[in-house]
Length: 211
Image (cartoon, rainbow, N blue to C red; front, side, top):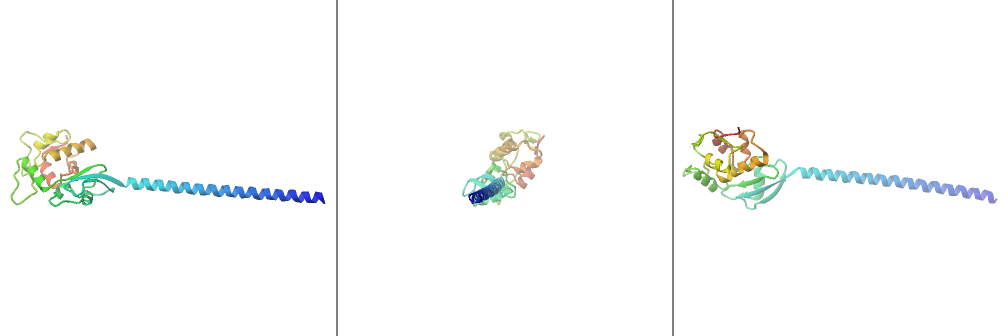
């Protein structure tokens, strides 16, 4: 009788051991699955955050705006989007800011006033008409100093003195742009400079070169 009970006891212990082992293996499998899922979720969140960060740009807005400062915008935003966020003041020369131009990350957008545009024109010996505040140079001929102005090598002073309608502020931006983005590949690239719109470019295109 004792031997039979002992066999039963051993069988019961063996069965319990098998159940415990199976339960442990199952728990380990479930734990591993949970860890894998958590890892996948973390990786997805990281990728999502990276994607969102890559879809944003930052630009600095100053000049004739209510709230100058640094602004975050979606990639592909236009100059007007940044100016609208900063608040465009009355009398600002919006047309000269190239409002439809795509923004570049890290750039500075300066909105000039109509008065500043007039002052620049007067400073370059262009008297504004009595009925207009947005003045463009009347002449489209190369300056008397001779030759075209190479916008890849000209200094701020040369750009200011030799290009009608380009004052010290815009001349500085022309130089800053090429230093930040490399040499101008073609004269049309000067339109990427804040303050040089279609009208101003039309008056400058016969005076400049990129040779």
